[in-house]
Length: 272
Image 1 (spheres, one colour):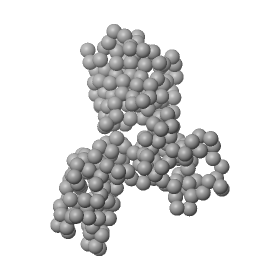
Image 2 (tube, rainbow, N blue to C red; image 1 turned 90 degrees about the horizontal axis):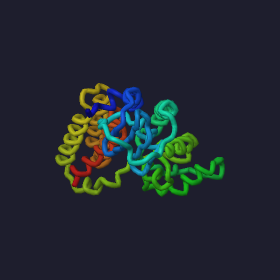
Image 3 (cartoon, rainbow, N blue to C red; image 1 turned 120 degrees about the horizontal axis):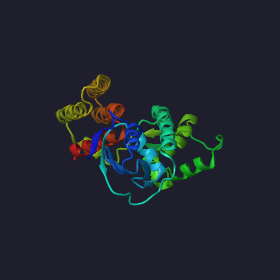
Image 4 (tube, rainbow, N blue to C red; image 1 turned 180 degrees about the vertical axis):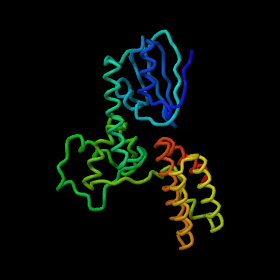
């Protein structure tokens, strides 16, 4: 019999504990926005996991920090392969540690689709960098998102964030929104009334995303009010871009970075 539900109501570590105690063999399929992954169990023990280009233990840890999305467990006869030898207890202890660490990282890195760029006065001559940090610096081209950097480095987004966190703290880099898929040049073609209609459309789109969350609704209202003020001051294009940033932040705060990324995709379609 299939077992399914929401990751918001039942986090992955709790789900695995429930199924592992029962000694089941089968596959968990998880989704978090545009991300997806599978975790295979044999006799209640985790033996294989995969998400994106990650497999094994790192895939389990990556999916453990997903706070949104859905899961379904389907019984199966066997796992396609075995990439994990650690016990469930050790896996879940490490997953719990990473969840706690991610709560700290996310205060400076709210989304893994943000783009690292060097600050205006950045200099490596006065900063002591580790070999790992030098590797990251060599991949920063001010176009790649954190997710893209992780792929280029052959690491998980979590590991990339840990390295970038120190660079952010030292002031070597900063993060900016990734508007590469959004045709921002289209904003130059819009008149005042069209800009007003666009801001209303974007706000309504974000409101539908966050649902009844009072904190996210408050962030959306703040972003809308700032946009109105900027439009009135004669900066309509800046108003829309800042509005998109504010709405994305509100969605990320309640639903996580993957849903925020999906929101930017919908914004792109609106502008197209």
